[in-house]
Structures are given as structure tokens and as C-alpha cells.
Image (cartoon, rainbow, N blue to C red; front, top):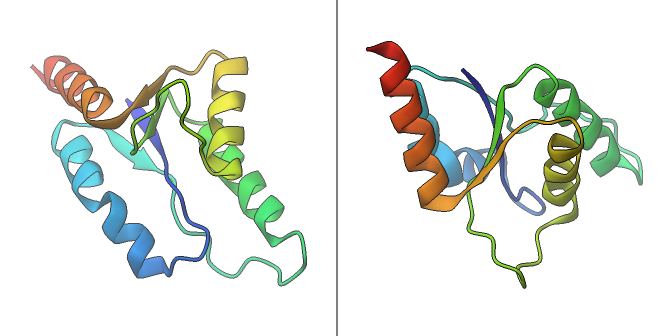
Length: 116
């Protein structure tokens, strides 16, 4: 299964972004999933740089079977606007969205089940 990882990136370095989700990426890959999403190298330096990055993320998302948001989500959780847009688009196009530790467990279990 191809899994897109959505995570906050604003104000973080490439290393910080990768560190935030390295455990989830590793677990998903060990379970047999192909992982997509991440830092965009060399976006154009304009006032709409974030929009360019979102477009690149949506291209990756279009090739995936599920979206995994590394954080938890409750009714009152306010997500970064890029993550919110990715999640919204996934929902509009029928891509399942999973959140936090429980979502990670479900994806890993599903991957291991598919490998068996």
C-alpha cells in the first residue's frame, strides 16, 4: 500500500521535518508500505511558496492509497493549513485518512497482514 504522511512543516528545517516522522516512516516501511510525503527541495522563493509545496504534496497524494497524519486529531484540534488541505482533499477523493498512534497501528497491522 502507498501511504502519504502529512505533518506540520512550517518553520522547520528539512532535518526537523524528517525527524518528526522518522519512526512512523520506518514502521510503515517495515510493515511493507511505500511511504510518500515530505520536505520539498528548492520551492520557488515567492510569497506563495507554501501553495507551491501544497501542490507538490497533492501530486504525491494522488498516487497513494491512504493518508496518515502523524498527530492526533480531536473535534477541537486546529491543524496547520497545509495539513488541513491535504486531509480535506484526501476525503474528497475517497482516500482513507488515519491519525496518530492508533492510525499508525492500524496501517502497520494491515501491511503486515497483506505481507503474510
